[in-house]
Image (cartoon, rainbow, N blue to C red):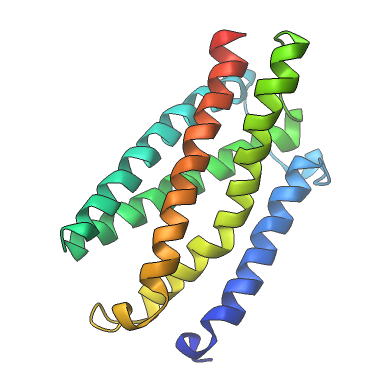
Length: 184
């Protein structure tokens, strides 16, 4: 199969598979006996490690955006691949924990939960879901086209939108972490 000619279709398939895994873990539809059980200390550390991973991803997105604005394609590519790797680490760890433990309950006051926590969480989740196909599409275009060809594709436009939404999603995810583990 010529991937280059089928980037939109492949994006759709990969996005559907990725989101199916995310929702299966989040809805606890994956049998826990399928997953090896890590020590409780490891499972308990995942949110804190993921907060650090998120901060690193925020930094790598900013580096990548600044690099491409300066015309430094090599640095841009490295930063965006680093962000993708960080996101993969975050997602695997998060989904592993949530598949085993379920989502973390908010321990703060109901008014904060209703008017701050849930709106932040909702927008974070929405942006994370929307980012999946955008990021996959931008990555597939970058992987199947030369640097000279990329400006003639949707990569610059989709990449700009994906990076912006991804950045906001990571920032909101970090705010959700702070509310769950630092403030309350």
